[in-house]
Image (cartoon, rainbow, N blue to C red; front, side, top):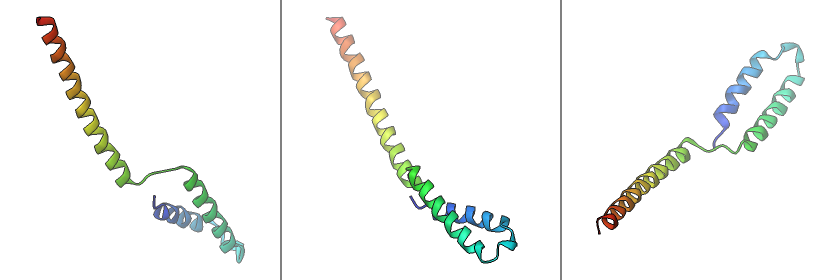
Length: 83
């Protein structure tokens, strides 16, 4: 998953809130925060929207097949009961 826009938004917010009195430490704080964010997001094991949409389509097809199989079983049971 491309987490860069998410991290960039958080870093922009952090940069605005960091006091200007940090001076040269400001860049170091930002770099460390960016590294921590990247690591945290990587551990979340997120998927992209595209991957999610694909899985949703697979689920819909699977559900349709299951419903058809259930109907087939009901039809077969009815045929057996009529004998």
